[in-house]
Image: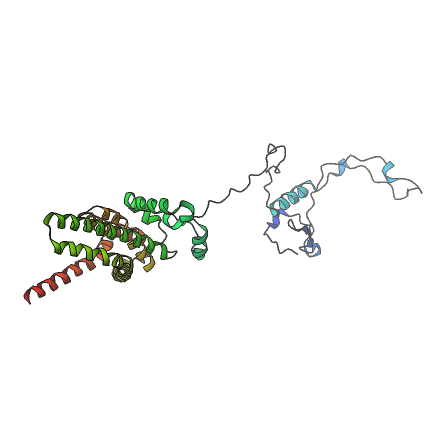
Length: 346
């Protein structure tokens, strides 16, 4: 028994039928006992259309074949309606419409049923939530820097920078909110180190030119001191300060967002999403290659990208993202001004 079952209207089954065949496993079974049912109503037969019965006094001779006897002219078959009803019931039981042509038959033009269409390739947008980790490992990331074996180092780095600068909303909307913090951190450190190294070279060039122009030995000594201690500060201590600053800013901004979500009803995407936004929003730091105003322009642009990234990554309002980003900056500026005023009074 395969366990297949289906409800069938009993009015469509012949009254005397008691055996059925499963359409799935073709197992025959008894679904009722005919003796318990009232006898089926047989329509009356026209007696005039039936030939006379043989007389009881004329028994069949030995060896006489019944088929050799003359056929009697019978009327319409009284069981034809019951047979038609039985066929309709079996078709309904098998799930086949009575008038539906058989697949591949002449009425259907010999066409085979269409094969199921293949499902769309999984992406970060349609990947199942219960298998997020498996999806992250099998679905390519929309961030080129996270697919360096596919793009290459410099094409992946430059592609990520241009995507953040040209279409920040689309980039942060498609950016995976999970998947690791190492690659975003490396991206941020590379750009920050590039900006500091560029400004370091510009400062040495400016001091050298200024010392030669003025003939000041003090400026020359200052330039030599920076040339000796600069690489150590840039390559050793500055990355540690960057990582510490990123962790602190991520904690502060995400805490403010969580507080705002309680009032706005949002849920957000987790602290990792905030960290990834802060890392990739450092793309404008490439303007640090420009002297004097390059770091300032890159810093202001980076703040704007951070607001856009938090709005898209956490699916929240732009005002909430702006408040979470600007509040720590304003507090730091107020603290710096307070310290400066206190130092001036002393």
